[in-house]
Length: 565
Image (cartoon, rainbow, N blue to C red; front, side, top):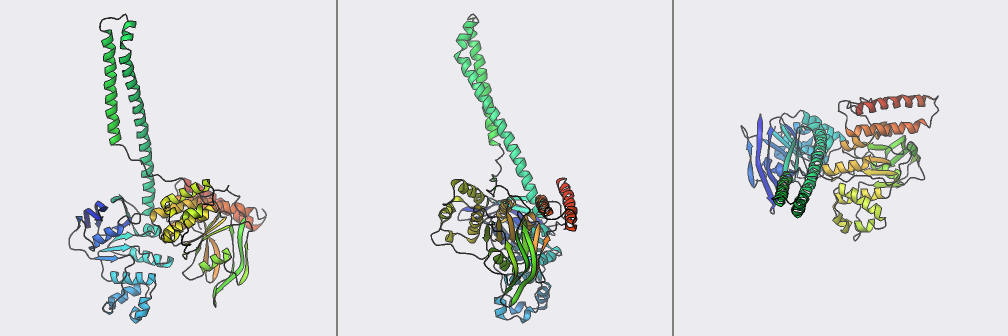
C-alpha cells in the first residue's frame, strides 16, 4: 500500500536548480536508499519529505491518514529534556544499549560520544512509532558493533525506511530499492547497493556499446554523403565531356546532369538522415580514467616484509596487547580490526617506527619503504600547494597522479590552492595520491574513507585494487574492506591475531571475491617455498590451495565460493 508520493518536486538555491521534477513513491514497508554525490540534494529532498522545507514546485502527497515521520538529521541531534524521560523513552534507550539514561547528569549528556548521541536521537524517534523513518548518515559515529546493532534493529522496524548513507555494507543490509540522485534527476534501481552497482555498470556498458555502434553508423553515413556529393559534382563538371564521348547525342548533356542532380538529392536525403540520427543520438557514457596506481614492475610475492614476535605494547598503565605474533607478505592486503580504543593506531605507529614495543620484536625488511596516512589531521604549511609538492617529480609521474586525482574527484584547479585551505576530505585524497607517487612497498591507511561520498569510495576502491604493494587498512567501510582484503589482524582478548577474512556464504559472489581468492592463492604459493614438502605445514597449505583453486573456478562460473574462511 502506498504511503506517500513525491510529484514533480523542484527546488533551487540562488537560481541554481538542485531538484528537477523529482517523482517517486514509497510504500508502507519499503526499504529505500537515497544515494548521490555530496551536494547533489539528498538532504534537501529528505527535508522536503519530512516537512522541514517547502519545494518551489510540486508536492508530497500522503495517502490515507497523515503518516508520522521520524527524521534522524545529520549532525543536528538534540539533547533530551526532562519531559522526554518517561518510561517509553527509557525503554527505547535501553533497547538501544544506553543504560540508566535518567541518571545521566547534564555534563554527561553534553559530552556524550557521537555514537551515544545517535542512539539517543534514535530512541526519541523510535518511541514515537513512526510510519516512515528517515535516516541521514546514521552510521557516521558508530563503530562496527554499533552498525551491526543498528542493522538488527532496522530489520525488525515495521514501517517504511528512507536511508541516506555512504556506508555501502550498511545499505546492502537494510535497503531493497536504490534511488540515485544526479544532476537534479532521480533514477530507480530495484535492489540494494550491490545490485545498483552491478546494474549501473551493465547499463553503462550497454550505453557505451550503443554509442559506439551509432558513431560507426554516423561515420559511415558521413562517408556516403561525401562520396555522393563528389559524384554529383563530378557529374555536373563532366556532363559535356561524357556526352561527346557518346557521340554528342541530342540531350546527352542534360541526361548526365539529371543523373548528377539525382545524386545531389540522394546526398540531401542522407544529410537529413544524419541530422535525425544526431538529434536522437545516445549520449556518451561517463568517462573513467584507466587506473594503474603502481609505477613499479610487480615484484615477486610471498616473501615476508614484516614480522612481529611476542610483541607487547602499553598506553600508560594500560596494556593494549601482549604476546602477539604475526607476519605480512609482499602484495598482501589486510585489515586491522578491533573496538574503538583497543590500540589500532598505536600498533600502526609501532609499525612505522613512531613507537617502540615494550616487549618482543618487530622486524621490517630493510628494503621496505612505508607510506602512512594517519587518521588525525596534519595541517600543511601555510603557502604549500599541491603543485609545489608534485614539482620534484617527473612529468610522467605528475600526469599519472593527475589521473588518479581525477578519479577521486580532485579537480586540477585545486593544485594551485594552499593545501591548508582545502577541506580535510580534499587533503586526504591528495595525500593518498602523494603516498602512491612515492611508490611505497607498504601502504598504511587509517580511515581513508572519512568525508568521501559513494562515488569517491568506489574510485578509492578501484585504485587500491590495482596497488601491487602490501596494504594495511583500518576502515569502518566493510564493503571496501571485503572487496580489498584477504586477511585481518584482529584485537581479541588483549592479543593481535592474524586470520583469513571470511567470504560470507549467504552473499552472491562479487567482483572483489575473485581478487580476494587470487590474493590468498598468491600468499600460499609464497609460503609453500618456506616449508619442506614432507612437513605438516606444507600439506596443510597444499590442501588449502586446492580449496581456493576450486573456489576460484566457482566464482568464475558465477557460483558462491562457499569457503569456510
